[in-house]
Image 1 (tube, rainbow, N blue to C red):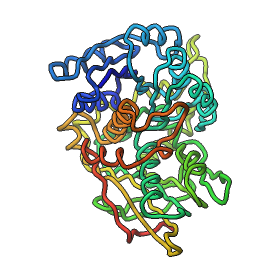
Image 2 (image 1 turned 180 degrees about the vertical axis):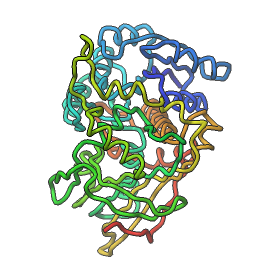
Image 3 (image 1 turned 120 degrees about the vertical axis):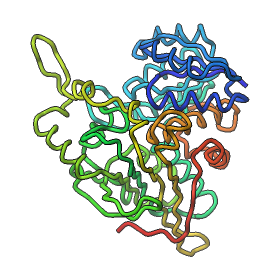
Length: 399
């Protein structure tokens, strides 16, 4: 079918590369590029020999000229951005200049502000439309699969969806006193920011981690869940018919929260630069450097994740409740691709989103979120590529 340029070589990229190689009919060739070429070469060495041809390259994803030069050299059909959210706009600029389709897994964040909004990327709509290329935003799990779940529910089971509760639960244990399951800098910024939820046409802010519930999740049992802000609420509020309320919930252990509070109290989660021995350093970036690399957690992590959406709405004038979710086993992920389930649940949908665009199933000029396309082929691909979903019409509801 074609060639993908994958930018990034961390845990999520590793899973996406594995999955591209499991789908050689679409991904005949891939080029893996990152700032550290040795990481790309290690992935190539692990996976070379199959039907998918793998090459590697070095690139600074903050540099539009470097990105443009690489895209012109490699001539990919699509760019799959699995670098940091700070680099979304530079990669989008490079795709515009070279007229190549674009896919990412998380919305742009300014490096100096813990702010999660789509406005910067949505501002590219006209440019991508005029260039005749597609930008698919947020094709991870949340955002990503949660948007596809919402589109699927809307298409098949509801005339109107009035309420969505997104629940992201990780019951895995990696054995460390404190570690994050994905990029520490992004994870900690997300958790320490103000929470919010969408209600009656507006977003209502909350203090960080101030709203808590207990929810009994299939296969992992009752867990403490906390209300957070998350970017897919912003797009779902625009794209889901009849929506009145959206909330996003995530599980955290008490040990994690205690460690995080201590780090926050001593300034280690700050993104404001400080001077140390004549150098400017960002405390959160230093903390990232001393914490375990999320990509190293795979062999240590046991347990399961459960991520899904609980919908309430109406069909033919009657109330409907619907819950669709995926359960993913950390150890099974490690056996298959050498990663823990957090990277797996993001890397698989990243590959699927790129495949949707490359095959033309989700291709039209402009900038789009996943729920703006037909969910059915994506839902089928989740079952085929390792993230089977389950559904029930009698879920426990969150008050």
